[in-house]
Every structure is written in C-alpha cells, then in structure tokens.
Image 1 (cartoon, each protein chain N blue to C red):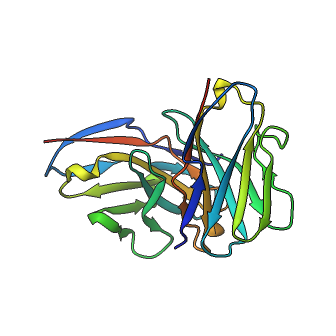
Image 2 (cartoon, rainbow over the protein chains, first blue to last red):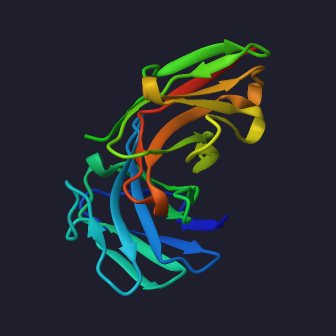
Amino acid sequence: SAVISQKPSRDICQRGTSLTIQCQVDSQVTMMFWYRQQPGQSLTLIATANQGSEATYESGFVIDKFPISRPNLTFSTLTVSNMSPEDSSIYLCSVPNLAGELFFGEGSRLTVL
Amino acid sequence: AQSVTQPDIHITVSEGASLELRCNYSYGATPYLFWYVQSPGQGLQLLLKYFSGDTLVQGIKGFEAEFKRSQSSFNLRKPSVHWSDAAEYFCAVGAAGGFKTIFGAGTRLFVKA
C-alpha cells in the first residue's frame, strides 16, 4: 500500500482567489487521481494525472479551473482557480495499484467564503 | 451506463447488533467491487474487494461482503458492530488499474450504545 500526504489539510479561502493542493506519495506511481467530495456527497473524479503527459479531465471539469501538475512520479498538485463558494469541498488525492484498489490521502478541506 | 446505488443514506444500529449495508451496481463488464470506509476528517480506507473466485470475501475490521451476480449486489455485513465502526461507507465499482472507479453516494452508519 502507498502512504499519501496532502497539504494543506484544510483552508479557508476568499472568493476569487486560487489555492494549490499538494500530494506526496511515498513510492513512485505512474498514475494519480484527484477527486472532489462536496459536502454530504460522494466522490467525483476530477482528473487523472500521469507523469510526463497532460492530465486527463472528466466531463464537467476543465484545465483552466483545475490545473494539475505532475513533475515526477511521487508528486502532484491540483490548483482550484478563481474559487467560489461552490468549490467548497474536500479534495482527495488517490493512487491505484494494479488490482484497482485505491489509496487515499486524508484530503484537503476547502471552505470558500 | 455504469453506476453504483447505495439505497440507504444512513443507518443506525445498536452496538453489538449485526449490520448489513446494501449496494447495487450496473457495470458492462466483470466488475471489480470495493467497499471503502471514511471516518470523520479522514480519507478513504479500503475495507475489502472482490475480483473473482469465492463470492464471500473477508475484509479488515471483521467486515465481509457477498457478491451476487444475479442480483447485481455486493452487500457489506458485520455480525457485531462496535462503536468505532461509526463512519461513512462507500461501495465502488471499477476495473484493474483503478481506472474510472465509480463510487456510490455512501451510507452513514450511526452506532448507539
């Protein structure tokens, strides 16, 4: 299993600002996923981040709003741009193993005022 | 379309009582099925998984789940619930490599003394 660290664990942000969430994995992984969990909701996949290529975004999510970097095999960032209160969510980084099991960080809880 | 349905938004059981959380799925191919648990303020942790073979699978913390292909179900059970089991439980369906894992809406478990 992988150990995943996310920063920040929580933050309160002002409308119109941007915040970058960092995800560090204790081993090299090809693929990393970013999920959003809105209050009281399930997880929705935002994008898949592969090292050495552009992230692949799911329907309803765009690069301008959620730019992702993947500079190496152990690290990724997700930026939430031009935030509005609707972006208040928990953002989760996840890595899979070959069996399809997902390992998650503890999440970054964003509150946008 | 692929989907996961957890019919119960929340369930309350007494400590020591048995538990069953329901999950139904719709998936085009042979599914990889998972149950994850999310404790307050935490990321998700894998409880158990089913890929093939014995349809009754054992997981961590005394949980088990049974795959019933004819009913497209993967219900989670525990014979005796502990207060520490109070959490949110997510059923998920996916494929090898973790691609396109779809999560159910979750069932919040409350345990009363």
